[in-house]
Length: 113
Length: 527
Image (cartoon, rainbow over all chains, first blue to last red; front, top):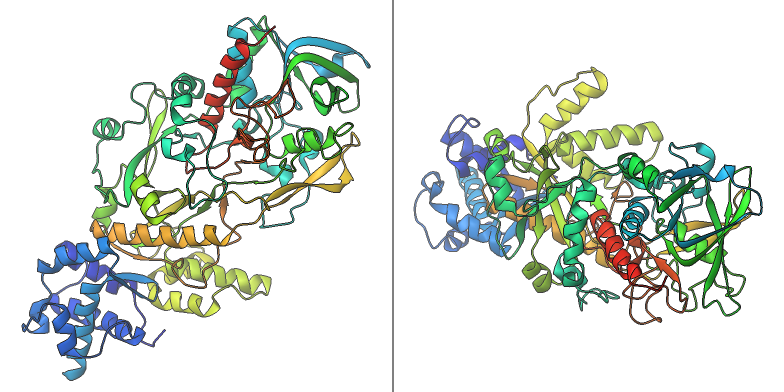
């Protein structure tokens, strides 16, 4: 466990983001902060490369900014990941590969800022 | 009629047509069915109408294997048997449960679902269950209301657990037994041994003792053992005057293959927006009607079990009072008090870090005496109930100790297998993925870890299956497809001890159905 930890509220934010409405995170920027924290944990597991280009390739080569990547458009892909068993376990939490990639990109983006 | 065995005369011989040993659901259903056909039945019940310590103590015995509920507590020994403390969960076994499954050694029943189907229908009323489409999920979901999940049919399906009140068979059927002209229930009558002909081919009499006397004998054309899966082997082991290993034990199968359902409660914790949990009201609790009730569960589909080659498992989607952090802090507090390090010590600390809200709630409860969570979390804690695979090394064994009647006690030597461990890990993966796919939330589980071990605090069904298993082949089973003990012409067993495999269903409804089926079989037998 790294010193960042993975607070449940981070995951609640992700879940709420998936549901696209409701109480929880105050803003999109909060979501990005949460996603970056999860992303650091994902990268620490070594399950994904710490390479933005390689990560973007896994999302079909999207060029959009990281901020613009966090949309509902990924929901079908996330569902397919869970159905197919394409998951990444992070500190006991099961993430879809797609959302893990998004979070890893958020972490790398934050590091670059 | 109901009377007290202690009022019999020492040395008395009682003659009857059919003698049933054990007054739980199996014995009572069997007796009432035979009574309806006009057969004379003597039902011998070890206990009284109410429990007493001296009788209950007859169950006492050691535990040698995976930690189990003390045998003195696992079952109840008075009229109604363990229906005096059961959950009331009922569902029939599936057709798939009766099949031989290549990936489960020793699986396969000598009967098929179709052989039992009509008896399930007849069993429903005994358990005070709905008879109107009781297992039609959509029908009942529509009446109750609430969202219905659409799980991937390649993984899970919606399933009904029909809820009995739960029926306490001694209480519910006492009047019927008391007024019956053909059933005689004898209380406080402990069967200590079955005596046989010189070749052990026929049981001639049951030796009966009451605590503080008297001792008497019962002769019958047919004997049916309707006790639990530990006491039946004990009686057979103690009936060894002709066959030294015990009656019906020519092939060393009596007492082997002990099996039970285990429950990991919960197997995961799913963090969800509160509204998601609210819309799962169909699943998160029981729904009772004027007659019976309904509990929605998610069950592994046949397609899934065939494809993944796994045993059967189901989930109850209960709201969880314990988040990962709360559970971790409780385990750590417990460890401090006992002076022992908990398993996965490092991960417990990690769990605190990942769930500070939950840990805060636990601290508030432990140190500040708070009765409510200080931070309102929304969690679902799916309860896993799973089938353990038949294991010949899981056994009821005799021990060097005797009860007050001078009869050998038995102990339990139960072992879970690597296949069982993998079933739990697999099931945790299925439920966490499926709840995420359905958009309910994100899940945390400890069970997918490589070093996961089934916790010794696991929930136990106390369903003592398998110890006199059913098979057409005497080398593979103690009883045949009719429940008759191989090689003994007039000895039958009606108990979940004859179940070769456990499926995911609680066994009691099937015990009732099997008793009715046996009654039909015995009705046609020679008087």
